[in-house]
Each structure stands twice: as C-alpha cells, then as structure tokens.
Length: 90
Image (cartoon, helix red, strand yellow):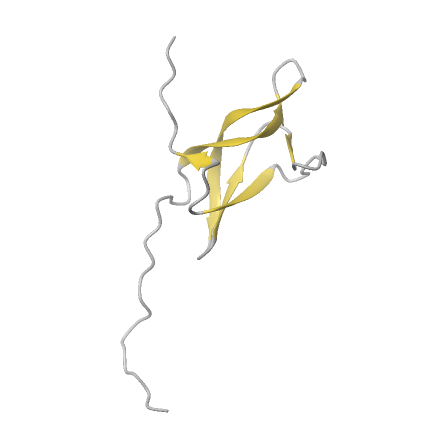
C-alpha cells in the first residue's frame, strides 16, 4: 500500500467550541426542585469527532430517570436536541 504524505491531519470543523454556551433539550430540576423537560443552558466542555459534552449547574437526568452525577450530557453534533442559545422575550 502506498503511503500518502501530508504535513498534518485534516482539521475538523465543528459548529460548537469548548466554552460555548448552548441550549439542550433535557430533563432537569428547576429552581423549585421540580423535574421538567425543556431547553436548558449549559457550557460545552468537551468535543470529539462524534459528540459534544455539555455541563450544567442544575441536576440533569438521563431519559431513563437516573440523575447524572457530573452534570454532563453528551450529544451528537447533528442532534436536534442541541442548539445555539435563543433570545428570550421578557
């Protein structure tokens, strides 16, 4: 097999970057400690070729009901459950 010379691996372009604020659709506890399913703002803390990790100050839950101890949920880059923050009407 012939080797292909290159100086560096190709750069991947992602919609999100570490440190970005995003909104994700998830289950979490609101300020009244009620569990709700809605959009929640979080911080992108890790990115790989397939997934984006978002961390939250609130308690977040998996779809099967388990609380996530590190408050980090992972989403695919093309998931409809992650988006840039929307401006809210006051």
